Image (cartoon, rainbow, N blue to C red):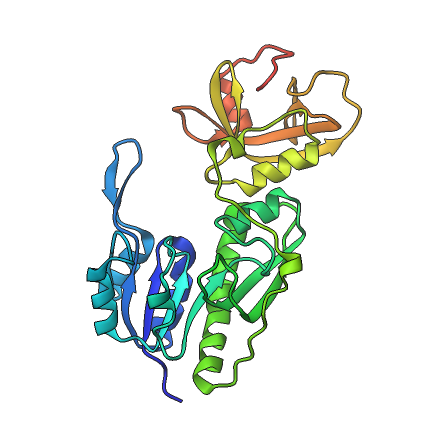
Length: 312
């Protein structure tokens, strides 16, 4: 069976394992489409996306259209004449012109068990909402948002202490392996497509700054899920003396607190104690605005906190 000529479309680190798998297994990747370079960081230095950097290392042609709908890019796309398009966290909505062009398929790797968690941030929201399982889906793209027919799915458990970063990396690798299976099924003409059950649709909207702000009046478990679901980036945060304090790692315990939610307590082997609605959260790794990330013990060496200080 001949491998199809593939145009790969992806931008962030999530897409890297898929591109590596295709190249390592000698699938003919005829080009890579990624988002344009953008200013990043404090210095707003022009930075290339991870997929572009990898594609250049692999010697693949790279295209960075501001909009894939632009006639100039559509002409390039038609001249490339891909038999299949593979999309992994590309970051732009594809027009019907691209979706319907390849004779084999336009495939998408989505890090959830669709139809659950359609949208921009499925890995984050699965953890934030306390899910214990998730997975990856390979789907046929249509013009909707993650609404195409399902080809393959693979489930995985979310570990009790797993962060967004850890789960993201696992799902990226899992999705890359599942993609190869889906491509081979499509090329052989033996793939089975399953329409999504619209009664089970849930959404994972784009993260906003306010998403990460901790409400200490919430249950302790919910607070820790928020911290895990946003670690290491963009990170959950609270305020200490008017300055933003990012929190990357924490545990919790259910109890009957006497103090108001957000009140700081003792430092134990579990971390810096903070009162929540139904117990205590133990902060382990933090970063004050303008400072480096550090363990809470290192942080407290340089920051004396008054007893009964209230965060938030």
